[in-house]
Structures are given as structure tokens and as C-alpha cells.
Length: 262
Ligand SMILES: [Mg+2]
Image 1 (cartoon, rainbow, N blue to C red):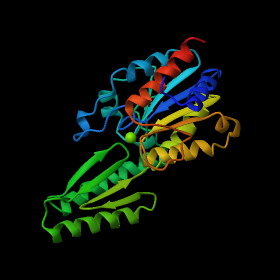
Image 2 (image 1 turned 120 degrees about the vertical axis):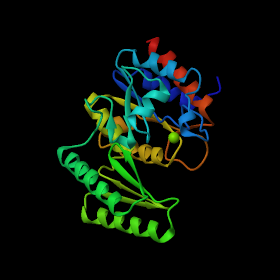
Image 3 (image 1 turned 135 degrees about the vertical axis):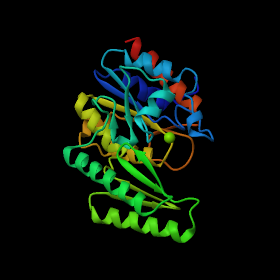
């Protein structure tokens, strides 16, 4: 065993609770980072361990990712009863169409669809990428003046609809109808499930937001019972740290053994 005694004790305590949520990021946590995101595969044993945990009584398991639901399901190979939260919380595999949007956001998404279609007609050569709750305008490869005019028009479109979240980049603008975040999504899921404690592991900036959200969980008893694990180095708001994906695998297998032997 190479887990720290503190982490092992925290897992043992977590495993003793009545109802728990075990959630993890995918890329960089369960699956080593690779050059082409579609080549990403979970570490051997990782999904097996999560699947075993998901069938243990009182245990819900979720993958929480910035990826869209489709690729997340395909690359992870996750099957029910594992839950998938995609697009940083804008997608939820429990919903009929997967889209975790309210009525107002759905109307806004339809408006965005219509507006970007018009934008593409007015600015030939731009590429519109469809995301579940967003459209991304790409101008790479276009003459600079053509590209910047298109980006300006896209930004103006975003400003006309004040509920859109506009994220500019280099030769790209993302217009999103929902900016949920992993922390908000995790707490909402935990509320829905009525769990006593939450486990979460991840490796990136969006996971740091989740670690902070769980630390400031309005349900203070649940906050006190949380177990958060940062995968890799760098400053963190998580309580524990493992070096890499094999380190997280050891955590999950330990939790699985503790939980299934209750
Ligand atoms: Mg990650």
C-alpha cells in the first residue's frame, strides 16, 4: 500500500457511510492525457473499479467531465448505473435528451442556433462548431480582416443576448447558454441523490473549482465528510493528492475493497 495513512483513513470513513457519491474527472485523472483527445483511454482497471463500486449498495458513481456526453460515454465505455455529467455540468446522462438546461436556456439555444446560421451566411468561410449548450465560431485560415470582422460580429451577437456567456480566444469565440461548472453540478447531483458524503478526484482548473465548491457545500455535515483528491502536482484546494492516474486507480481500488466488503 502506498496511499498516505490520512487518505486511507478518509476512504475507510467514507466507505462506512450509508449513501455516498463517488465522482471523478476523466481526462488526466482516469485517462492519461494524450495528444489527440479522441485517442484518450481509461487506465486499465479504472472503469472496472468504478463499475464494481456503482453496484455496491448505497453507492452512486459518476464521471464528471468537460467533454460532451457522447464522446465521454464512447471513450470511457461507461455503462449504467454509472452516471455521466458532461460539458462541465450542462449535460446529464439521467435526462432524456441529456441536456441539463431549463426552458429559458433551451429557447436561448434555439435563438443562438438561428443567429449563428445567419452569421455564417454573412461571413463565408467561418466554421461553426456545435457543442451541446454552445456554438463556437472558428476563423482560422481566413484572411485576418475577414476573420476579425467575423469575430467582432460574433462577439456583438453575444452581447445582444445578455444571457449568453461569451468566451473569446485566438481566432475563436465561444457563445454558451449555460455556464454550470463541475462544482455546481456535483452539489446538485448530491442533493438529488440525498447522499451523506461525496468523493471527487480531478487534475485540472475546473476540478479545483469543484474542490472549492465541495469544501463550501451549504450542507456543512456533508462538506465535513467529503474526500477530495488532486491528481498530479500544482497548487490545490483538495484535501489529498496522488501523483498520477495509477495513484488514483489505487485509491479507487482501495475504496472499492472497503465499500464492497462492508
Ligand atoms: Mg481532467
